[in-house]
Length: 167
Image 1 (cartoon, one colour):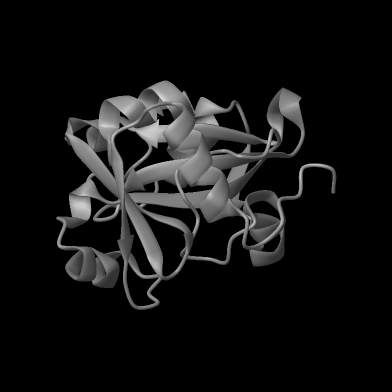
Image 2 (cartoon, rainbow, N blue to C red):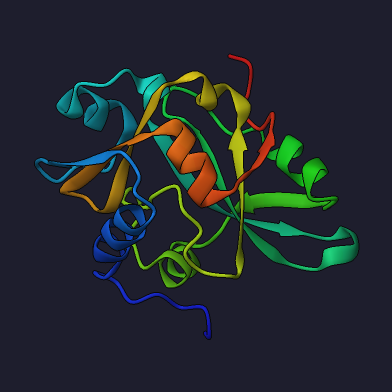
């Protein structure tokens, strides 16, 4: 796959990307963890400050099969129908773990909120942007980052939408 990212290099790429952009961020080292609720406790952030990233397949409509990186608060669940509608697709579902790892270079639970592969479109739940800073896994299950939300928006350039369920 031409857009494949090598596992293990994502953390270094993120540090370089954020440093070159003069972003305000800090690295947090911690025990291995991939679940949103548990990692928020370890990092000391509210679950709604966590930028949870999920690789999706959207199919049908005029675009064929595409991949989307959906970013939402760690406390929320994805609204698959909203993503399908947003991308004018008939169906939306999780990408296979193998596809997600090929596109992101990360195991499940370690995917950062950046589309480092050109094959990934990125969309964020608007409610996440109410936070001054975001917390996220940084390509590894034992590394996280805290990043200024405005810096993330400027660097990631996500599409803004309502993609989380209203629990």
